[in-house]
Image (cartoon, rainbow, N blue to C red; front, side, top):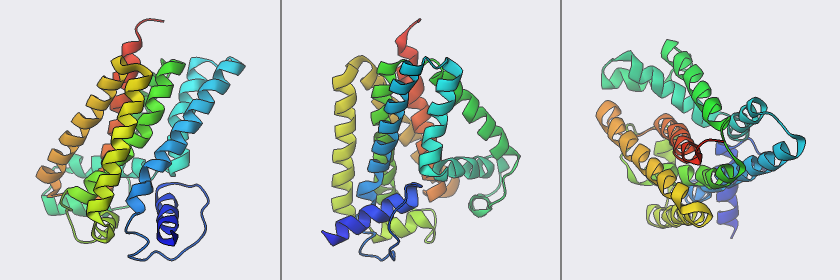
Length: 254
């Protein structure tokens, strides 16, 4: 029981800004940490839904609603996945060798491609979320856990591009068999929730997440020789954006 609790603390300490007790990370308490990664998405989904309800009550306009929708995941996660998106954008935009791209991933400085992608991402996210109806927000709330289930599954399954870094550390420490089973079950639960809420939107949302996962895996293997923590952040951000477009565009006209 202690190991599971400590694994939860490790997951939330790394993947969120939610205050957690300070503990020493060990190979044992990192073993099941990825199993709790989707729970960070659950928290984000709950807060998104609460904002949806609050926005309806106060009569907030579409611009304010969208701004808060876009900022909630960044604030709760601390921007760790957004950082991965931007680092990966810089590496891909460099058109350098595989080794040089891996070096760029580790560079803390933001290059031109990171700035361009950052601006484009927030514009694309704000644009689609400004059209979100409460029913769509409820479905997409489950998507934040789904994207993290896929991301964690990838860390336990796909080859790592290097032996060092967070992805490699968690991959090596994880009890891969049990973690994969747990994450697969969590992903299946998320998809079931989406389908129960509205299968006509749930199917495209799940399909979008799977397609982005497969495409990012292919990109990681071709361009970097495997995954890294930054690449998984890149995937997670694009996955959530793709699901938002898949669901919200199906609303039809207001």
